[in-house]
Length: 385
Length: 211
Image 1 (tube, rainbow over the protein chains, first blue to last red):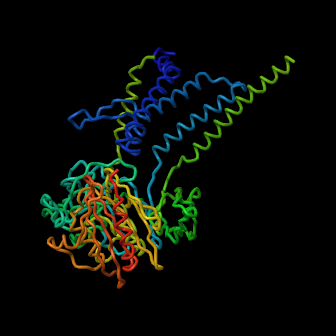
Image 2: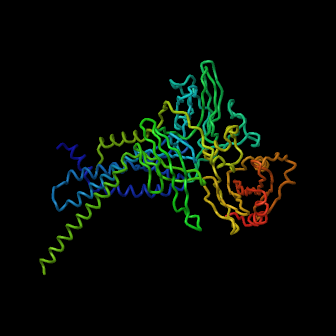
């Protein structure tokens, strides 16, 4: 073995590495717990755990600097460390079966968390009674959608993610006959009718509802029960010059339209949509409370599932701890508004089964290990007497 | 324990990967949205005045599904009469009660929003608009509202009677500036029921405190 390979091996199988990584993980979790006050749960997950490094901006600049190892880094190294140590020290002995099984469980748990972090997609489906939807919406991620609605049967959509809007650049897409220029972008803003907002600065928007609306930038909110409502002024530029500037925000609710070169376009800033090849219709939402209290006993949504491609058309009852699993998605009864509106959490997690398997493995491993010790102990005792 | 250059190289690669974000512009063909359902359209009837281009065909529907920032400052507290039944607050409300009597039901909502949300007159006229009443002018404000001083809070309370959908309807309301936020207390329902509840509502307003 060359000295370099040996150095690699010794580094990755080292128990010291395990201790250092666990100590760093404790610091990371402690720091993230404190940071949750300002960042909220999603912000903390993104910044501390679903990241290789915790990045902080150099004061006075926008340059991010890695200041601490993040969750992926520590978890990844722990996984490598565990795997390497196992391969290096592995001996096939029945007395060690329990420990091997337990460690295999831990390895699977780490892999499962990594896969969940990488591939899990969550969105929400909000339905009023009688309403059908063939898409769910992100509850945090925003997109600027430009829809060509000319065809009576479908829309051609170009969706620009919020992260790109924040750059404030001009964008050209092959499906768009015009250039999209982000004049300014606010991550959180409130809108008011201009005639009701005293001393508001002049409107930047020239088309649509924008000129009648005053935009009031707000600080970002990180509270779990509040959402940021971004706003932007978007200028569309054709070969002949500017087509106008539109104020967009999810608070506007309805999209604004323009006609250009004989085609009708809609421009809207909305929560990111995930279209599905099936539709859900809320037939009935029921909300039971414990008698004489406001404590929810049960809330349930009776929905109709109708697929476009197959002949699936059935009614499903979704209630707490009884989600609908369909097409790789899980629909959980998450929340509600009033007595006639349900909110379903829509989760795609290809690795959802791994934590269950790893817990079973760990439990089996621990039982085996303690069982082996117990049997040995009883044998020794009976040998003495 | 010693870190060799290749280890650093591997870590640098991880760092680069960590910098990648979802920035891809996507283009796809999507089915048209199914026609909106009619129920639940008034979910946001109490949101502050804002642009609502959806007015011609679906008032409220457009705003109902959109988030509105609610107040983040100190909360107000109150004690409601025992005859009122508390309801779930939902996403928008800070407090919610059902007021029943004479076989009818009125809704009491408590909401809060940052800033002045358009000012006192605009908000009172929004309520008047919900009852089909003509908007008030600036000079009519004092004759149509009552100022109350409750534990250091300056309340403006109103009593408007009008019509919704041909039925006599009344709003008893109070607007309470609290720090940088504005709080709205609004009891809306059948005219006679709400009129009968007026003493209880005024008593309720006197229990409001800043936490």
